Amino acid sequence: MKDLKYLAAMTLPISAVISIYFKGYFSYFTPFYAFVLIPILELLLPHDPSNYEGDEREEKRKSKLFDWMLYLNAPIIFSLLIFLLWDISSTSYAAYELVGLVLTMGIVLGTNGINVAHELGHRQTTNERHLGKLLLLPSFYMHFYIEHNFGHHAHAATKEDPATAQYNQTVYSFWFSSVTRQYFSAWKLQLKLLTSQQRGFFSLKNDMLWYTLFQVLYISIILYFFGEIGLVFAVSSGIVGFLMLETVNYIEHYGLMRTKLPSGRYERVREVHSWNSNHVMGRIVLYELTRHSDHHYKSSKKYQILDYHDISPQMPFGYPTSMVMSFLPPLWFKIMNPRIPDAMKPLKA
Image (cartoon, one colour):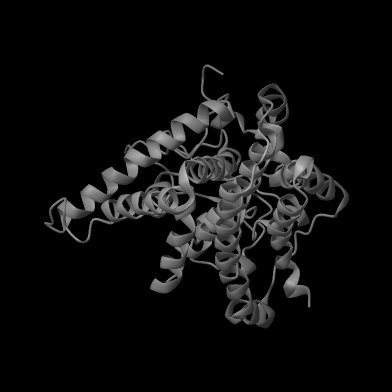
């Protein structure tokens, strides 16, 4: 039964159902749950630094239950999205309610959508990777598959990586720099791959072109069936979704930098180049994303068997709480800057 703990991730879509059903000020229940109640639970619940070993580890690795708990997110997310698009296009809502529902859908898209897509995007099977890309569609972030897998994992914890936050950079500055640089980096990686394969821009192998077409088709369908209000809602929710991702990106590597070797290359990514957390609530609602160092050590390792490393830098709070803290830059800098090794800080700091 304890394997079912990851179903706690479904409490976010459930909170969205509560927001949709009760409306009014309850439209903000999902943001309240994500950024108030979950952080409180993180503070109350214990840490768990244990790792699976031996036969138990192999049993967990092979169990399909953990995979199906990921797959379940797809029908839930798209059902919520379609219902909300139909509801707002046929019901009169106050402006404040629409804002609450945009935040609600965006949070679900960011956590149960992009976060699950991230896990599936590292899988070895084509169908799982395709499902991951589908989950990126409502957040208009399909390029994330290319940039994350072939860009971020090569350049993490360096200035060359758009998804690594620099020392003393605010999350708001990072949103802009990471969103824009990752998109152009994805195109650069795609064009480099096409050139190496001696293919042209309009090749069927140009995934970035396909992603663009899919996303244009997606918003066109929404505009046709749900009108302008549906389009505004979908676009706004998608923006909230990818800003949720970028906030996680911000806290994952903030200020942690790899050393540049005399050869001009960087040292390899090690356990000390990602912020980690063993806070139970954050671990299960984010499918072990908080054991980020081990993910970078072997990106194909399934979430349920990611390990804790005692040399990895640990956050004082879980990821959800840290996300809230990052929204207040002076507080974030005061708490996190002293935790960054001096050798990783810029000389002028």
